[in-house]
Amino acid sequence: MPTPLKPLRIGTRGSALALAQANETRDRLAEAHDLPTEAFEIVIIRTTGDRILDRSLREIGGKGLFTREIEQALGDGEIDIAVHSMKDMPVLQPEGLVIDCILPREDPRDAFVSHRFESLASMPAGMVVGSSSLRRRAQVALRRHDLKLVEFRGNVQTRLKKLEDGVADATFLAMAGLSRLDQRDVARGPVEVAEMLPAVAQGAIGVERRANDDLTAMLLTPINHAPSAVRVAAERAYLARLDGSCETPIAGLCEIEADGGLWLRGEILRPDGSDAITGERRGSQSDAMAMGDDLAAELLERAGPDFMALPPL
Image 1 (cartoon, rainbow, N blue to C red):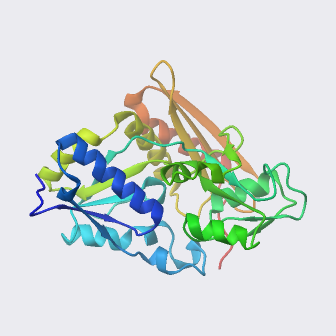
Image 2: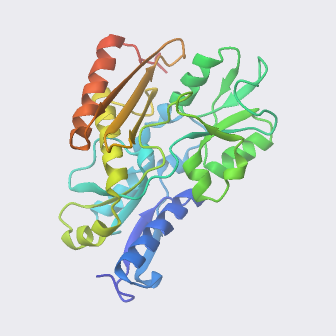
Image 3: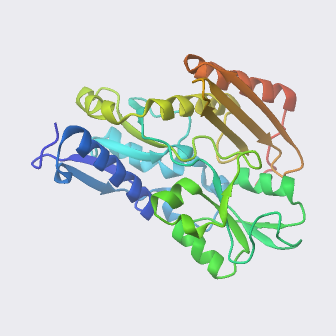
């Protein structure tokens, strides 16, 4: 067990949202094991994705840019666990690391944020929407081809500042992030999933550990939220078959229905928003990963080759 003499080191990015997620993890562990917060140390690790903000994720390497340095520190024993937004996690993990702890999932929906307009539908033609997400950009283009799209990278605070500075007339953030920052009032409101499916695993926090660290595994077991974990498992199996990354516009959401079964919805889009293919599966929780894989296989077959391919940089 961690003690004040040897605290459990929690690795995280340094943004306000990442720190809120790390603090939530610490607080849940402290409560589960009746430990003081001093038994834990938050270790901030700056990632490549945090350092390079003037280029798109596609240009500099995709999702792994937000996790590589943190996972390196975990593998090297510099930290004991790593806390991640699961929507940022590549589906393949480095050898020797596992994520088998998912915290209770927050609202997975996107948030529409604008100082001028109430919704995407209310924006006049020619207005500017800022987003770094290929998924959001393609979804906006599909629905509103008359709007202009611009690159809009940075953490929540950076993107809100860009909006204030007039770089764009509207943007999208995750409702989960705004909730964890106690800033839900920033959004005009959530975008219903029937209108715009979110990113895979959006709103979920995952805790990564070394696979051979049995003590840490024992510590994490009580804070794993099984309903959230099964939803994330279905979505990430779907993403894995699609080979999803920041370079592919993919959306997906799994929900638990009243009878305990799973409802998985998925959408893949052409990067320019000219077309989209959707599908869904319903099944038991024990079939979560098989459902995800099967839905992805169907969408790929319907799409044909190069449906999600981007033009060369």
